[in-house]
Image 1: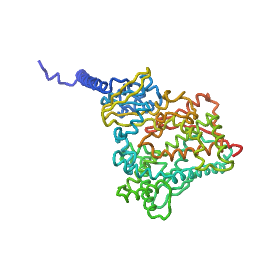
Image 2: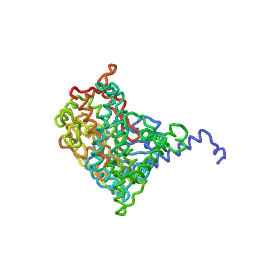
Image 3: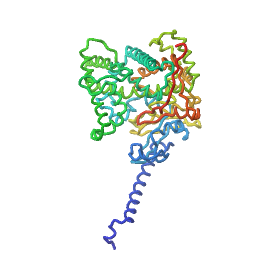
Image 4: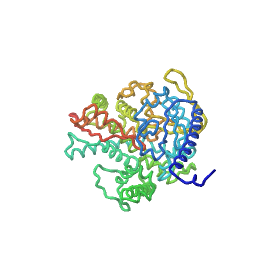
Length: 529
């Protein structure tokens, strides 16, 4: 006979009820798992319990099958797919709800995805936090994206390309002059090369993107109406961006660091508002991105296109977000590789001396001649793609075809709404397209290669709009460093050289991009410079 005592909550009853709920969840999850596997054609791939979007994953270590940290694609590289015998696999996540993610390192299928924007849009929810100052070319899709893209592309003009080269050269020469004044002209020791490259690229973006000139000496005073200089504003934004995107204002206001982050974003908004007002009334012609974007907007207005001030500031902020630290980290890794591979450095020096007369500075017109420098940059970005994955979504039911390691052809059904993850690292280490993929070998880019097996800037209509800006800046920096200085790794007798090389060239994985450790480099002036 039923008794009220049976309703009393006891440890035994609670455990039984929890077991009952767990059983129901397990049965539902298994049914959903079977349905997912059927939907993706029972194709193989990793099974992971926790989704990375689950907060508890921040507290757990990397445990294959249970929890994968942000750097798992770097740790596994091509093995993430190779272990399953094909270049497209189906990742299955179980919690909080079962879902499939199609992971790709197959150039043909990737090309189809990247060139079919309507069928494979971006998952916009991932990018919406970047609309701090307005919508932009990163955070939009469809007709709205088309308008943003049309206006923004116009701002990356040939005149701006020349300005990027000029400002990069000027910034580098100012650095060399500063070293001279500090008594480091013949031998400069940099304790962390990424700190130097972050300052360098910030200065180039300041002048070539915003028209705001900065110097290596941070002794400026905030202009009237501001509490922070433009330099300190950009520095604070770059260091505090993740917290600003992740935390609400009331949490940021709890301490001085959070308040400084909020202030820096307010300051940038004010600076950009002043730039709009100044450029619209200025009789002078400027070729920085901000001015070009303003002119492009006015041209489109005449054709009836609406592009608001918030669209303008949104796109400039998007470029700052996408363009500063990515270029800085690429430069840091490139200089570190040159230090560890002196034979590559010497070959680049020979090409520089063959094409640039002694005593002259490299010009923008010299850039096409410096093919080996470009190859160095490309190879560094192959080995360490700063943005390790490219996310997409399948708009419709579709199917990919890939070749398995046994030579057979595999079909991978993809249901509508499925997340797609282009595994850039896995692709860049795929031995089908890259011989000895772990070797640093810039020469591979001086010959034919599979273009869609190299995607540090993505490709297709939504490829990185600022790619040319970054390439010009990086090549100018590498050229000036190599033609004037021999680059070496600062000695440390306490650590085995091979282990040190492996440690220093192994990147860290942040929430968005990969970045270098603290890499100490020494620059010794060349006898002929």
